Amino acid sequence: GIQVEQSPPDLILQEGANSTLRCNFSDSVNNLQWFHQNPWGQLINLFYIPSGTKQNGRLSATTVATERYSLLYISSSQTTDSGVYFCAVSYNFNKFYFGSGTKLNVKP
Amino acid sequence: NAGVMQNPRHLVRRRGQEARLRCSPMKGHSHVYWYRQLPEEGLKFMVYLQKENIIDESGMPKERFSAEFPKEGPSILRIQQVVRGDSAAYFCASSPDRGNTGELFFGEGSRLTVL
Image 1 (cartoon, helix red, strand yellow):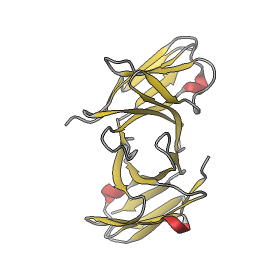
Image 2 (tube, rainbow over the protein chains, first blue to last red):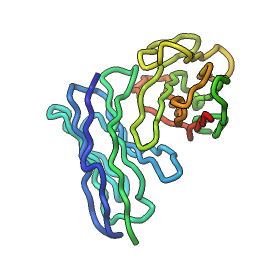
Image 3 (cartoon, rainbow over the protein chains, first blue to last red):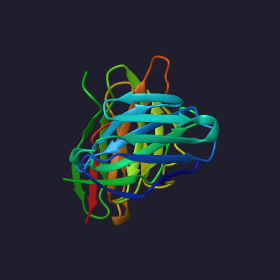
Image 4 (tube, one colour):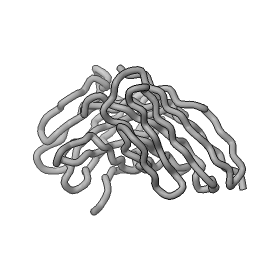
């Protein structure tokens, strides 16, 4: 299967700070998604981004498929951004491989 | 448009009992996936189903676990003779039918505790 590595594993930010989360993957993919798992365990779709750049409010993401990585940018972080951020990739539509996540704690 | 619905949200079973977890996909989605999440870990693929067909079950344990997605009704993940190691959150996801890109939409999960 595809190996997915996310960094950093843990991140502590002061409210208002910016951050970049990284996702590296070991093989060619044609699907990539970013999710936020909130403290209640819900998985929220952030981006479906197999390639290119997308923005949604304070969040943006870039995937460079040829170099096998994706970046998630969080600007002006808020306490509600706390939780775990997962990257998931797939080369077919049968299964996604998840990274171990980046655990973000935004302090007020 | 209602999201992916899972029930029960929480389930407690004693060792040796059976657990049945249900998942109704979003309207217009006929692709259903089951994932398992152990505490402090990422999600692990278990099975991918379409209506009445198991497409990929390469992540399912060989024994005690089964899944179905009948023509009518929700998808069901069944765990027989549960053991403590089965305690986990089980997430269901669905993806759209038309021009399926594989984009996943998750339910809120079913948390199984085995005593």
